[in-house]
Image 1 (tube, rainbow, N blue to C red):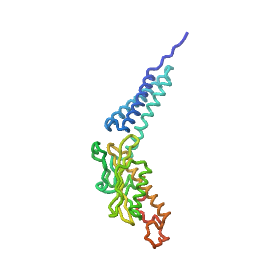
Image 2: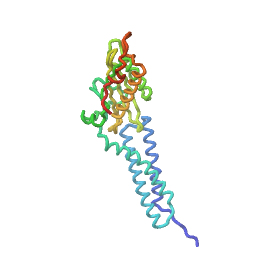
Image 3: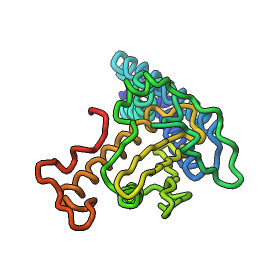
Image 4: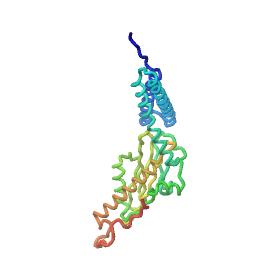
Amino acid sequence: MRILLRTSKWAIWARRLGGVAVPLVVISLILHRLRLVVGDLFLAAAATAGLVALLAVFTAFIALVRLWQTGDQGWSKAILGLVMGALCLLPFGYFGALALRYPPATDIATTDRGLLPLVFEPGTAAMPPPKLLTAQQQADIFPNAATRTYPLGQAQVFALVRQQVEDSGWLVRAEIVPSFEDDPARINAQIVTLMGWREEVVVRVSGDDSTATVDMRSASLNAPHDFGSNGQRIESFLNALDDAVTTLLRDNPDVNQPAGIEPDADIEPDADIEAPPA
C-alpha cells in the first residue's frame, strides 16, 4: 500500500510570505534611491515589508515544529521561508541597534549653522525642522566633530578639502573658492545613503595666508533620523583632513614659511594643529 505524505500548509504559507517580503524590501529600496517614491511612502512600504517578514519567520517556526511532530513534507519550504524572512529583518535589527545607540538627530555642525547654509535642489520640498543634539550630547557622542585650525594658508587647506570631497565621491552642489580678500571659502556636497536618504555636507574654510579654520555641517534633507551618519561623517572627514595636513607638513616642512626663513627643526610639523582628542 502506498502512503501519501501531505505538504504542511504552514510551510507553504511560510514560503509564500517570505517570497512577498523580499521583493517588498528590494523594490521599495530601489524606488526610494531612484527618487520615484517620497520618504513617507518608503517608510510605509518598509514597515509593511517588516511585518510580512516577521509573519514569515513566525509561520516558518510553527511549520518546523509541526513537521517534526507529524512527519509531513515541506521542510524545504519552511526553511526557505524562514531564511527569506530573517534576511528581510536584518536591516530592521541593524537600524534598531543604531537607534538605541544614537539619539534622534538630523543635523550636526561644528559651529553656527548660519555660517554653513545648505543648498536645496530646485523643485524639492523644504527641509523639515531639524532634530538637534545639545552641545553636551554632541561633545559626548561625537568628540571629534569639532572645529579645526591648521598652520596652513586658506587656499592650501581648501585644496586639500576639495580633493577629499572628490575622493569621497560626493556630488558637489555649490562651491565658493578662496579669494584675495580672504573671505571664507565653502563647498556644498550631497550624499545618497544606502537606504536612499539625501544628506548634505557643508565645509567652510576661513583664514589667511598662514592659518586656516575648517568648520563642517552634515544634515539629513528628508530623513526622520540619521542613525548617527551625520556625526560619523564629520568625524571621519575631519580626521582624514588632519592626516592630510600632517602629511603635507611632514613632507614639506617649509610649505608655509616666508621666503628666506628656515623652518625650526625642533618644532614638529603637526604641533600646531588644533584638534580634539580622539
